[in-house]
Amino acid sequence: LVEWQVDCLLCGGVFPVDAQHVMSLGYSPAEAGGADLRGTLEMLILEKSSGEVVSSDVLPLHWLPVPSKEGLSGAGPWEYSLLSSFQCRNGSLKDAADWDLRSYSAVFGGDRGKAPLSFVVAPHDLLLARVRDVNDRVSTALQQNDLKAAVEFAKADVTALEHYRFPDLLKAYLLDLLETHCELLAARSTDLSEQQPGADLAVLAASECRRLVGLDPALWEFWITTFIEYQQITALAPLLPLENPRLASQNYNRVLLSLLQQDPESSAAVFLQCVKLWVRRTPAVFDRLAVLASLEQRHAQTDSISSAAYFELPSSWSLLEAQAQLYIAGSEYRKALNCYLSIKVPDSWLRQQSDVTSGEEASQASESLQYRHVFELIEKQGLFSTVSSKIINLVRLSKPLSRRLLVSHVDKLPVQAVASQLAVADKRLLLWYLDAMFCDALEVYSSADNAEWHAKQVELYAEFAPSTPNTSGEGSFCFDFKQRQLSRRYSSPLLRFLQSELPSQALLQQVALPACASHLPRPLFHEMVFVLARLGDPRKALQLHLAELGDLAGAIDFIEEPLLQEKALPQQQSLWEDLVDHCLQRPPPPGPPLDY
Image (tube, rainbow, N blue to C red; front, side, top):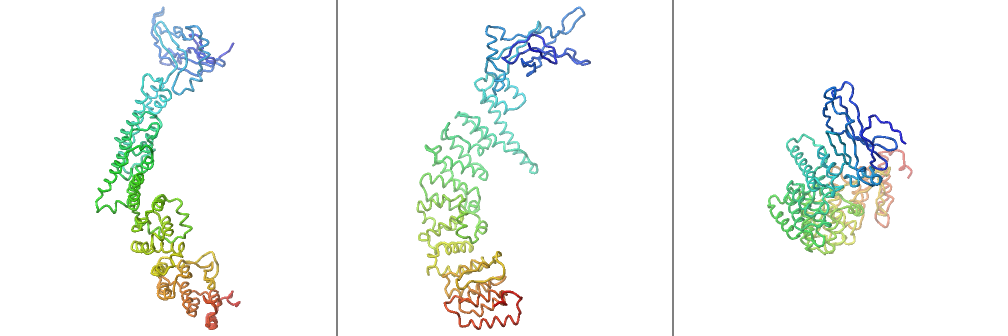
């Protein structure tokens, strides 16, 4: 025996629901002073062991007036009885034991087991009570305008749907997302000041389409058409299935051609993404030649007046790369390379990226560049003749990768051919290239055939790469003339170049010294000291040390070194005298110079 405590009057009998639960009718009298004195009758499901109510539904009953000795009065709860299908045939207890309410609650769609049917009967009323199935849950979700929940219920138990079709529910859900998205876009266009919150509903609709449509090709074709009509194919295109199911090729063609017809600013990147994903599939998923012809026609429609500006747009870069991918798939490598070389990075970007960079830094920077495959294509297919006249176009794609290619293949891309093109385009780019040759291909670059560019390099170093002190050192700046190396306290690309074997006496005299002296806003005195020493005029170099740099320690080091000669200079004694005279005229502060 079990004792229960409930807050209503149980009536109509108690019947099993499953092994742990029972059902009954519960009558709750009306509140005193209320307008309705009849109370409510509920269908209760209770825990058999504790009497705890786990489910309660108010029944829509007809409380009809009936004649009595006192006149007309409402029918009471005593008029109602509860009957269960578990009572109506043999084995009802076994049915109750086999069916589990908790298992039903875990089924997302609804009842699929042997749940009981219950009948609430009265002389004037009859009500059927049953466990809610997927159709009931979908109906409730639709009444609450929760289309997503309705679709989720239906998908969880599609075979049990009787009153609805899953494709119809899915259509209502996704169309609602697309229409809401279009309404938000229209609101943004009419009121630019209004900030519309929330995620991109077209992207959400596309992801839900991918998740819910499944393996039905006809359904996929319908949604491709729908997204195209709503001009939202950019959201769906990358999510289209390529296997299981593989759609007919005309569907993929429609998607690519639709992307080409939309605004390239929003669709070009998606078009490129789809081409990369689809073009190498075997068998082919779309007609490569048809898409390529449409893309070529699009580029041809760009008139000569606007073509320069067109190819500077990032959207055109994506379309050109997609066209190149289509050519590569057909083994038309030169056409593909020409597409890449047509990508025109703005000159402002080149100017920002044309700083002198060491070979190690360039190698590290190239690891993450997106056009690496273009340079691999050039080397693998031997397309140097195509590149030789379009060096500036190549450099626009990637300076670090161009640096490696130009330095590694000087035999196919000679210094004269490369430098002459860069000189016309941008002096900073020319310096970038000459510095790369000096740092990474000195043996080839030191040839006398390149003397013209050695002189140009000195001028460009002086113009664009002036000396900069190394702040990690302390004290004055100095040079190690014996080893012809910079000390840790000073560095400059120009001085590094001058200390090499490349500069001739004529170059130092006619180019380097004037370039350093005319540098603005201040002459390059450190470099001038080195040049004068190399030219055999140490006295003037010492004067620069003392007068312009105020570098006593560097001046002493300068005098004591053989100054780039195997034997000490005859003027060394006079240099000491000049130094002493300078110190007498301008007494130095206490410190290292007085220790000599």
